[in-house]
Image (cartoon, rainbow, N blue to C red; front, side):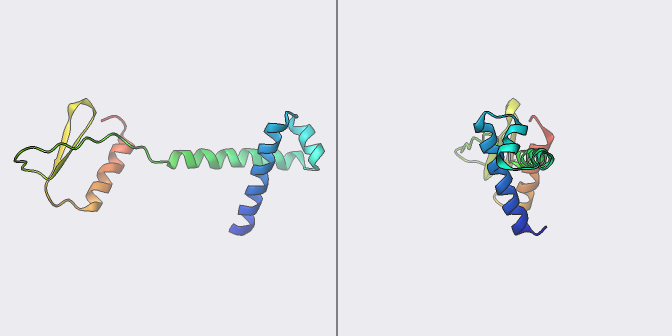
Length: 111
């Protein structure tokens, strides 16, 4: 199934799931009313729940950042972490380095 057809099918089944939840009907009764195959409904219900769970896992987690400027800093900026730890960076920090740090902080859990 191509991306366009899959996208159309996903929209169609998401619409049915929304309508079913609002209907107050059992899944079987909704399928009978709409002329749907109950097994297809169940399969799509599970598939879309799985897709939504994967999307939720990919959502970025942001941590609060406080920027502090000293009178004569020997560094360009700092990132204050939970627990009172501080990371200080010089004037030139590669974007890839900051990206790797952000990923490590997100994947590593508590700071």
